[in-house]
Image 1 (cartoon, one colour):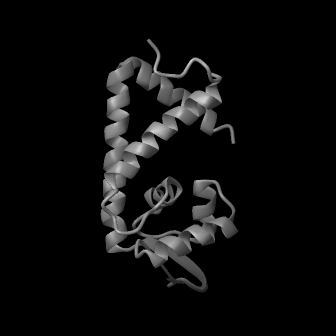
Image 2 (cartoon, one colour; image 1 turned 45 degrees about the horizontal axis):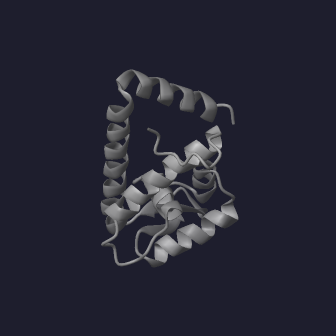
Amino acid sequence: MSSVNEEYPTHVFSLLGSALTVAKRLMEAEISGEPHRLRGSHLRLLSLTPAEGIRPTELAARVGMTKQSLGEFVSALQEAGYLQVEADEHDRRARIVSPTDKGLRLQRRILETFADTEERWRQAVGPRNWTTFRKVLNQLADEK
């Protein structure tokens, strides 16, 4: 018996969207005790921000958004105390975005939740199917 509602389309984009919704719910439940309500998109951005920092242009490319949109997300995470923005020590005109200590703690929780979800899904579909699924997703992501 399928848990996907038979009344709705089951094309690949609908299925991927449903799987991502499950993952977002798990992640948001994990951080529900945080004082600031962050959306899944904020958590994804934080999870992709390296501890050593990154220039906003590079981070925007990494997360697949415009630099302008990224600026709004970074501002929200900065106000909540999860990210900091500082001058690049090698080029004072450039900025570096990096997680604060608070951001690093939340980032670890996010990454642990991602790993737990992946393991749950791997167990649900079996190691061979999971390996194939990951390989296919990597191939599709490389088509940019």
